[in-house]
Length: 146
Length: 132
Figure 1 (cartoon, rainbow over the protein chains, first blue to last red):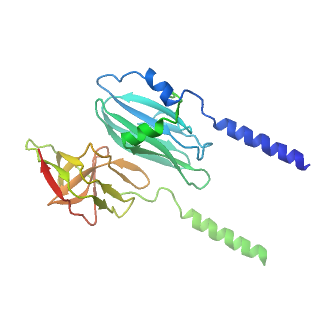
Figure 2 (spheres, chains in turn purple, yellow):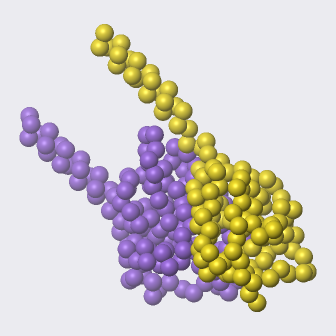
Figure 3 (tube, rainbow over the protein chains, first blue to last red):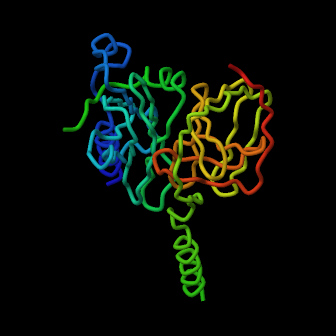
């Protein structure tokens, strides 16, 4: 009986960990294929550089439009016209980040996790470009959600 | 007896956790209009680091040596932004922010997306050096 329980636990762990694996090329491999942004746009990189709370992977919205998913060790980017933007993730609660985007500007938004009541809260944070460039290197390209 | 103690603890925990609403902390925001006048104010460099306690939300630091450029004026003071550091104000949500300066003090933040002003209860002095 004990061995069946152990086997069940093992299978469950494998299943859970397997479900959290992030596929896709690493940023360093993918970067050369990233096209330059159009002249009248700016770029926002969104990444999640941690495995904490990996099972919690909410959609990422930009001004209400779903643009991607908050996957551990994943990243994606969007090019947008200059203006004001709001990035939002929703778990038990909505977490929002408001930011401006200038023409030709690149911004890095890190997805962090904090403790929640039933599940962790994923929240977006604007970080310095130097910090973002360094942290995103360990992430894999997961693409935008369309 | 034991059961009633557990029940009591359960009730207390329920009350306590219920009080932990996640959206409780909001920074104070006053809707405001920014005006860009023809007369630009001089840019400045911060000679000393400034620690900012917004009262509600997380503390912020304005780094020494950062350059701040005038972007406009609100009724509470002049608005400056910097390309040398990212500045946000943070409570339950995070907002990009510019600084609002009046009489040499940091009186609050201007939130460009929300078009609002967030005042500081205890405005710190800014040690500024004018630059061209």
